[in-house]
Image 1 (cartoon, rainbow, N blue to C red):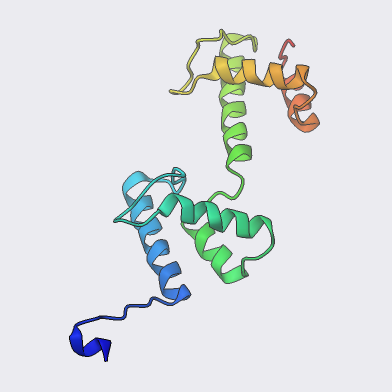
Image 2 (tube, one colour; image 1 turned 45 degrees about the vertical axis):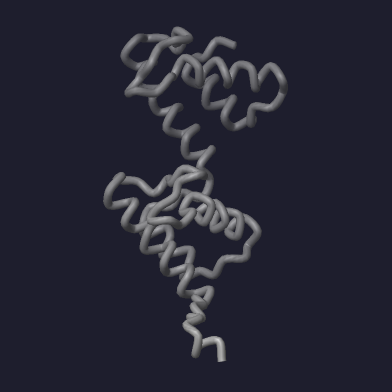
Length: 147
């Protein structure tokens, strides 16, 4: 009856909603050359960043099926963003150490556009608080970081 007065019932199935977000992720990747969508990013009116965060949470809880996981990985989704960022900064520190002969990065120093000095300062603070992962501490020790 409501249809007779112009009401349109539009319901997207969960799988259609997922596909819509996934297609926007592909579009984002093609444009930005990465799939690390900021948390609050909106793409074509949809909250793509929140959707991707939700996918990461589902993965962490073991509630994502392998085909979905593979599709997301195929477009470059990184599951542990913090770990990936740590590795990138560590690689920059290794490059700095090789070039300069030491790992004492000045606090305001930037390497490849990243604030490497600030990152190293944060690692020192985390170690002092006892919160730096032991494997990270070991890797930093190996390249001569002075605590």
